[in-house]
Image: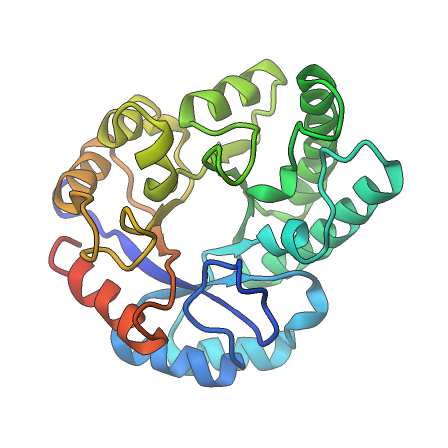
Length: 274
């Protein structure tokens, strides 16, 4: 297992992304992707609000020219900018979330990517009881999961810490939810920044749920690039290797101290271990 290839992607958005989006670059992909490739990344994770934000033929040409892949399409902007979620008690708001998410499934299918379910699931607060909200979210995920399956797209559920959302905060909670509602087609997407807050042990959870991992997010304890905080990435990557994981790692980090320095700092630090 020690020789397996762990591939590294950087999360980016297109111009106009909200400041709350955890991305390094908010600029045209024609500018950011060549820089990312030159730095030594294997791929780029796209944080999108809707399908109109990318010109697919142009993007495919750009990916071919740079040698980059798109492992995952992130959907947090559907919640943050679109102001809708699967948890919404209002049927129209929930339908809007499903419509936007469906469009991003189509983008993921065209790019051979996964799609994540992070904050788009929504919150309990303001939407009813926990039982009602969980059932509503599960119902949306059944529909979205069927669409994704038909499109050949894997959906990954991301646990998010309690300070950002009040539903499915830890890996254990995410797995229990998937099992409770028999959502067998979804895998989990641990983010070590969130795990540092919610999971008893980052390494322990990665090993415990090794058979459920679909994608992994990296950021340091302060959401800066790995190496700029106090997380032990040597131990984390060792746990990933021991778990048998040989997929993608996405650096979802803040553009600190500036976008280029953050992007370069992440890849240079992590290449020591990958």
